[in-house]
Length: 355
Image (cartoon, rainbow, N blue to C red; front, top):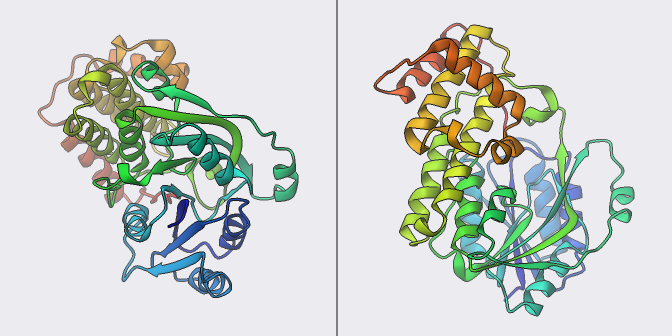
């Protein structure tokens, strides 16, 4: 049995997957398992992954999907093959510090194996020199957090699944939402709220690559036809924590995460390359739907909310609500879909690439 199983979903990452896998096979932690799940790549990603499997047969296992299903499905497949005490995730165009998993696992051993261990992350440009970044990283000890006593800190945890490892026995009934964007939100926050103890490292060990051809942060925002997925993942977080009996313990924090998750998507709409009027309408509908589902977002602590959404964007939302007044409709989901379909019909819809 491995100490840590690392799942790497892959789709068309031939330019980067070598650096990713190099950073994993060269981890200082012994007894790791690397599961590469190829999601029907059309470039040389699969060949590169298989070459690593051939050289490191006791460490790397390559699994192939029969068609392109998306990251959530690939991660779920990877978990079926994982046998480590802990499970982690790394995206195929990112890389990690060589001591990342050793520090995290040793910290787990020293602290009686908490359910979740987290570490810090760094955003890197494509042309950054990998060794220079790694050499500049300072090692810091972990800090244990009692979830019940420090539940407010969970809001400030990243929703990303890939700067964390999860004790495998806590994932037996857990899956990523499939076919959805932002699927990390439901998975990660459910695990955090369901845990009793979290071990936090502040090492900048996970290097998230900002690519010029992928990811909204690198090339500006375009219309996202999957906009309503934010509500699906926010709802799923509530469903899962109710199933585990933890929702009532953390209801205020969960509602805050639901509101901030959806308003972050509304903030992206403000940057879409569409008319000001259409952006305003979409933001208005999202804000109204947030209030209907999770409570009036304007009643939420503005300081906390602005740490995720941005105070300037929230000011814009308030002005938009004043502009449109007390507009009511039976289905805000329906009208948002109608707006997105109208954009597509007008040939102004450009599909957003996700990592």
